[in-house]
Structures are given as structure tokens and as C-alpha cells.
Picture 1 (cartoon, rainbow, N blue to C red):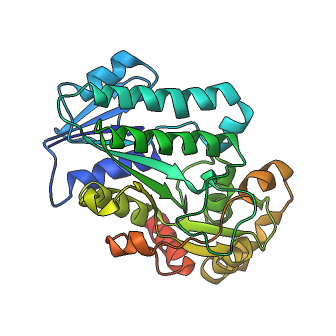
Picture 2: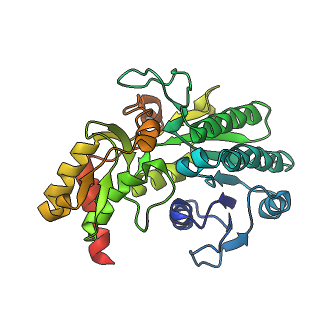
Length: 314
């Protein structure tokens, strides 16, 4: 089995590659296509340095064929909003270029596309059903919504065996803040637990749909293994998550990290972040996903403890 992972050198991609290497159905080879070298070292990994908007790089990565393609590479929400053309070029044009590369293969690969809850916006019910229309309120959300439609269309035509995984906001991400508007969701836990100052830029009653890195990776591996015939016409699945407010996150931080950690988080109102993040849903009906074997975290305390354990082990 041959697997291609775009964005494979990043936070999520590198962890996905590690999980795929240890999966029950272990691949013969994994191609990591990214602009930097893959940090995971294994004889089965081929690290290709290149961009997904380069047709030659895509052709080299796909080679004579691939059994699975995980498309993770993207321009994140904050950068997409500030750099409109860059966001659409990578998140839309390059996604179609990759799909066209798959179309040229003799056998249609399983194509797993990571999308976002940012495809929604406007008036929404408390719990978003699968049937709710996309109404993104950010450039990033628009790009992801177009990508979802492209994956559905290329699947309908038989060019790929596509599946869209709409991911919750992932926390706690290690490392440094990134350009995502949701970067603070990790920052208000990660920085205080590391003895650093942080800021919460949204109101404390802001509801967030989140998942831990471990659960997201497990669900992405599972996405490559399920029978897509069970999806029917709708190739999009909202991945399971848990609903937590920013205020509840800070309560968990204090419970597990101590009062000193909580005191390191300043409450700020940043309208640019509020406009994006507060347009996102806070809860989803994920009954179809869970019926297909996808899972969620138990609670937010467990996510914070998971990060604390990893921090102490490092």
C-alpha cells in the first residue's frame, strides 16, 4: 500500500504519518509532500520537498499510483483572511490541481480531505445538523467549502474515492502559535502550562467544538479504512468533538495547572478574531460519524491532562 500525505511535515501531518506507520494495515511506503523535510524518520518514508501548487511536485508525489491520499496542506484561517489571493490559490486552486493529478492515475485513490467547521456561519441552531447549508464567514471557510464540493464532484465522477473530514478545532497543539484564528484555543492552555503569558481574545461564553490531537489522528487513520459505500451521496462527515466554552477551558486550566497558570491568561477582546471564531458552530450532530466508528474525547479535563503528561515527559 502506498500513501501520499500533503502537509506531512507539519504538526498534524507528521503525527498522522507516525500513526499510519504503526497502523494494523501498515503501508509499504508513505510519500510526505511539504515545503520542508519530513521530521519522521523511517525507511518507508519518502520526503518530497515541494508545493501543492506545483504540478510537477504533485505528479512526482503520486507517481504511478497511490492507494490513499491525505490532503492536509492549507493556508490557515488568519493568513487566508489577510492574504486573500494566497488563501484561495492554495486552498482552492492547488486542491483542484491535486485532484486532477489523482484523476490522471489508472486507479482512483481514496482521497481524504481535511475540512473545517469554518464552512458554517450566520444564524445556526444550538446543535448543527448534517443538513445545514454551508455559509462561511471567512476566506478560509470559503476555500474549504469549495474544496468539499470539489471532492464530492470528483468522487461522483469516479476520479477519486473521496471523503471529507470536517475537523474540530485541535487542542492542545505543542510548539508555537500559528496563523490560525483559533490558535488561542491551544495558547490559553499551552503557554500558561509552560510558565508563559497568554491571552483569550474571545468572550468567555464562546462555545468551541474541539478535539485532542490523539483523537483527530485516530479518526483520520480510521477514515482511510472504512467502506465509503456507507457514506452514500454525502461524502462529508463532521468529525466528533466536544463542546466547551472559553471560560470552561480556563476553569480546567486552573484545576489541573493551578491558579498561577490561570492568572497568566489575560482576557482581551480582539474583534478580528471574534468575527471569525464566533461565526463557527459550537456543537454538531455527529451520529452518522459515530455509527461509522469515529470517536470523541471524554471531556476537556482529560485533554489538559494529556497535554500536561506530554509536557512532563518531554
